[in-house]
Image 1: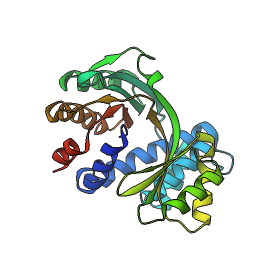
Image 2: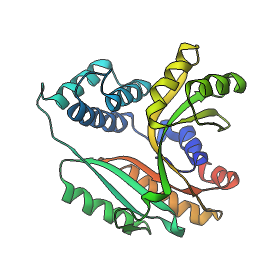
Image 3: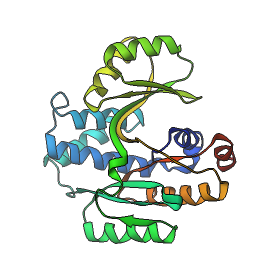
Image 4: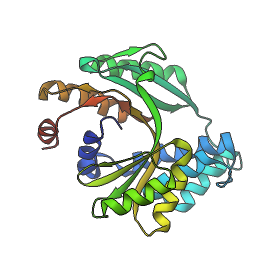
Length: 249
């Protein structure tokens, strides 16, 4: 789940106990299958597959599991055929939400996603209603003990757009086409990359300053994120640090 990066930080701190590894693996494997089906099994020529391969390895998905997923995607092994579908909507307070899914039954998934929005005080919207408030970016996470000037120099020279201090990590933002090159430059220089992915970054944010409102927003986002077909949830909330501390506590 992604939105204002400070909530991502909180999720990172508590994610180990909140998110079952098996569910995370299943979502990553599904994304690998689709990337392989659409672009082939060659990592050097299939940028989407290369990104998903790195993301899966960052999450400690075993190499043989990844290879089987690629083979299912290319048809070498039998597997389910998934299609990508995106839903848009609003959480409490007008927070914009985008839900990216991979499903083998569009009708079932659509009904279930609409139900999750409704049960948690949100509402779905027409395609394009909120997507204009987001931009596709590459995001690379590095441990915070790395020197800021060194990260900035290496990332900027490789084509990165921005560096953000998240308190427990550095986040490097890139254009989608520059993600692999920037990650490669950082790793070649000996820096340990925690993760890298293509994601949607909000171009505008909605302040959510009341703890009760923040809880309602987060409840919806976590319910969506927990759905098996949901691969990513993006939202443009801006929750202050003190409120985040209460939610994380």
